[in-house]
Amino acid sequence: MSGSRVESSITVTFEIAGRLDTAALESALRLLVQRHEVLRCEFQRLAGDLNCTALSPEAITLEAEEVGHFHTADELHTYLDKTFKSLDTLSWPLFLMGAVVRETNSTVYLCFDHIVCDGLSMPVVVNELQTAYAALTIGRPVELPASGSYLDFGDDQRRRYTSLRPDDDRLSYWRHFIDRNGGFFPRFPFDIGVSEDCLYPLVNRSHRLLDAQQTEALAAGARASGGSVFTGVLAAAATAQHRFGGPAVYRGMLPISERSSTETSQTSATSNAPDEWQHSIGWFVNTMPIEFRVGEGGTDHATTMRRARAAHTELQRHVGVPFVRAWELLAPETFSLHSWPYPVNFFSYIDFRRTPGGDQHPLWNPTLHVWATRGNGISHWFHRTATGLHVNMLHVDTPQAHEISDALHHELLRVLLEIAGLRNDALVSIPRPPRPMVGVKT
Image (cartoon, rainbow, N blue to C red; front, side):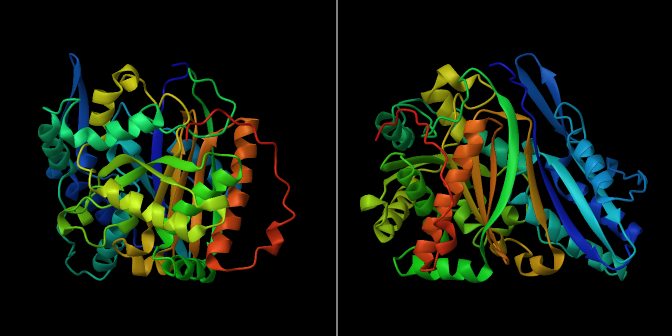
């Protein structure tokens, strides 16, 4: 695939009030790496495979370095942007740590290669560092919850599914989806101006969809139909695509959290997960297809939400098989690619209020940044915080993708306000771009 080198990272920032205790922060950062084995991993290339070993906690040291003084926000932004993008998947460490120190407050930043962590690892990082820092500044012992090793988790999962074969009953959900979909991946239903043999530079865009009060209204509107904010947003995304000319049957890929004993979706965040994984750093994510029909005329939101909820319930019965194993067995012709073979319909939702330390987020002000070098599609990460409902969009930098992204964003907001029972007069006059389409299968 042309331009196939793909790098991606996840960065989290948070605030520390008052003059920074540098020694306490350094100790907290070092402790973070010592506690989580995945951050101490080294990969070595073997014949036809990779070897993964972890440095011992005792081998970890931290050397603080002052990198400079920045007099403007633009200077700081340029430096951090260059620094974050210097992270190299092929060398250790697979993360960067630092702080922007001011007289009255400081911003701590940590940038991780996506290979070692998922989105739900970021609130774990923030909660752990804030807890450790607070104890160290007053000379108290650091008390942190137990955390499991992602290496152990991955090794156990790999062993359990090595013997899986394409005709295994555990792949029945995938096989039935493939039959109805016409392929392994649900295609994004609009033309965004890409060739299927190329990867393109990506644009990262973030928006707040609803403020806190509006999000509560959305939750109430969804509950009235037996749903939740998650099913409301999922139904709204499907409805927005349908109104824009997309199919009446929504088909998409959802990331599913594997942190809980029942392997529930990321919609549950980690509130019911065993402590071993709830406070762990790693990539505890499966990916599953979902499909459901949009309500009549794209206006029957209650019916769409009920169908979305039923589809999600059925999906959860089949989340055990890792996505990469299903891909390898059921679509081997594309498994060797460095990316998904074409633009895929992708939807993610996390309620960060329900993650470790979520009640302190208004004070700590954590912010998540997602970055990738190249891709061939458009993805949506929805998340709820104390300030409302937000969306992060990562899409190819083509004119068609910008137009489609803008149009779907506005249509989505219309639907969310309708479910919430709120006025959307301000949206009526927004012009819509042309509707380039590709063929879709319903």
